Every structure is written in structure tokens, then in C-alpha cells.
Image (cartoon, rainbow, N blue to C red):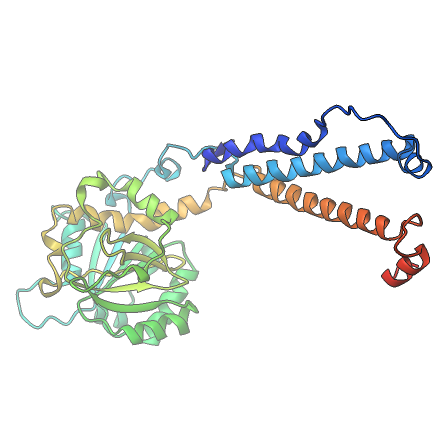
Amino acid sequence: MTFLNPHALWALPLAITPWLTFLTPPRNLPRVPFAALRLLSGRRERKRRSRRRVVQAVVQTMIIIALALLWASPQSAPKSSEPPAAATPALKSGDELTVLIIDASDKTRAGDRSLAEYLELALDSEGEASNVDLVSYLEFTTQSISPARYDVVLLADLTLPTKRDLDALQTYLKGSQSAVIVWSGAQPDTKAWREAILSTFNRNVEFATINYADATNQRYAPRQETKAEELFKATFPDFASSQIDALPIATATICYGPDATVVLRDVEHKAPIFTLIAPNLYWFAAATDPNVGALVAVPAFPALVENVTLFPARYNAIQQVPPETGFNFAVVLWTILGLGVILEALGKYQFALKNACDPTGTARSAAEVCEGSGFS
């Protein structure tokens, strides 16, 4: 068992304080024989008071120990230093996946590469990969191209989603373990995407186009790092020096919200770049348009595209691994604390009730006191 706040264990010696009341100084005064005092300090009564003091000291000791251990935040087992990638399948490169890239862009100038073409170039740098297919959005909607033949579908630069297309993607995602990665373009319709995701997948997410030159955007992403982020960092080659979490982008259309899981965020602005929207449905916020940044100029851009493409399979493998069930010490400690407080309160109440209803009292008679307290 390990503790997140081990300094709190210094409070454990305070558990001896309830027992210090037993260290009474020796009496030098002679005893005075008095009938009423002898009655109150008889052998049976003294034993009863001694037992009550011992029980009270035990209960107070339990409360102090439970509070100190809860403050120290016990953990059932130390966090493994082994990266999450150890539980992932042996997916080493994009050659082991079949990828379909759908080009939904509207190129205005001939000769300019679209986002989909940049993605294909990153996955097929030598131009010989047979596992990467690039089709236009028109071909995808009019021809019999089955996404089920592919492990990953990259939907690139779709500005305005239609319900028909999203219904087809939903049917595809339900019928397979494949993933769809929506790689946003330069100017997607954020309102249309939000309504489409809400109506089709019933997921509460928000889309916003942010300018990285503005103030920080920490409100868009949770402060605590997610398991998906840990996995992406662990499986990305040389993540620390690649600066993938500090991409040279001016604007990006991010996806965030209560139903969104952050996979990659900007280290400075904390804005999510790569997000899991729904099971096997992902959103990548940065486009390759030179007007919104220099994403393609990043030396690790091919590695970024490859690892983004591989991530759904790796994450699914992690999700299928049963979690390690450890003993929950916090529940036990809270139970001990609660029982201790209840016992302490009952002891105080019983003592007060006994004193109030004691027939030897001189202030009021037993019948008056007990009748007034409702215990007649």
C-alpha cells in the first residue's frame, strides 16, 4: 500500500492522546467517608465507568487513525512504471491497417494538395502502399464503396455534414470494430456538426473555432490527464522531443464537452486537438491549410498521421483489458470513521440521558426529568 500524501502519517501519533487521560496523578488527600459518595463510587459503578472510558478511548483512537490515513490518501498498489503500451496489440506501423481516406474538400486552385492528399502522402510516403485508398466524397456517396473493408476511415475536410452520411457512419460503427476519424478542415460548420453529432449519436459535445493568438483556452479541456492521453504519449515515438503537443497552428476547430474524451491537447493553451467523440468516432482539430498554420511543416507530421490512425485500435485493446481490482482502503477507512462518530455520539447521548434521569439528582425528581425528556 502506498500513500499519495505520506507526510500526513505524522498525525498518527496523535492516536495516543485519548489514553493520556488515564495517567492521573496520585492522590495525597485522605478519603472522607460519606454515604452518598460511597454509593456513587461503589465497586460496580467504578468498573462500569472504567469500561466506558476504555471504550471511549478506543473509539476516539479509531477516529484519529482513520482521519490520518484518509488524509494520507492510501492506494492499494503503486502505479506501474510500465507504460500503457505494454497492454496494446503488436501494431507497429500503418502497414498493418487498411485505411480509407475520403476527400470532402472543395479545392479552389489547381495544384494545391487537399487535406486528404496530405494524409495519404503521410501514410504512403513511398507511393507503394496498397492498404491506403483515397476516394472523393462524391465517389463515396454515389458508388458502392463499403467502409467495412477498412480498419480506419479518415473523413477529411467535411464542412457541412448531412444526416444521411452520418446515419451511414453510425450504421458502420455499430456493425464493426473499425473507427472513423473526422479530420476537420479550415472552416467546418461548428453548429451543424454539433447538431449532427447530438441527433445521430446522442453525444453532448461542442465545437468551436479558436484563435491560438488569443488568451488561454483552458476551459475547453479537463485539467486531469485522461487515460487516452497517457496511452497516446506512451505509444508515440519520442513524444517529449517531437513537440506534437505544441503544433504550429494559428486556428483550429476543436471538439470538447462532457461526452468528449481528450486524446491530445495543446500543452500551452490546454485546447484539445485530438478527441474521442463517441465509441470509435474521433475528431482531429488541426487542418493542413497553410492559412491556418504550418502543420505540414512539422517534421513529425507523418508520424502524427500514422499514430492518429493507429490510436483507435490501441485504445480499443486497452479498453478490452479487464482493470486490476485492488482493495479499496478508502471505503474501509470511511466506514470506520462513520462508525466511530456514531458510537461516540451514542455514548455522549447515553451519558447525558443517564445523568438527566438519575433518581439521585437534587435539581428535579426522576419522574419530572424523564417525563420532560420523553423517556417516561
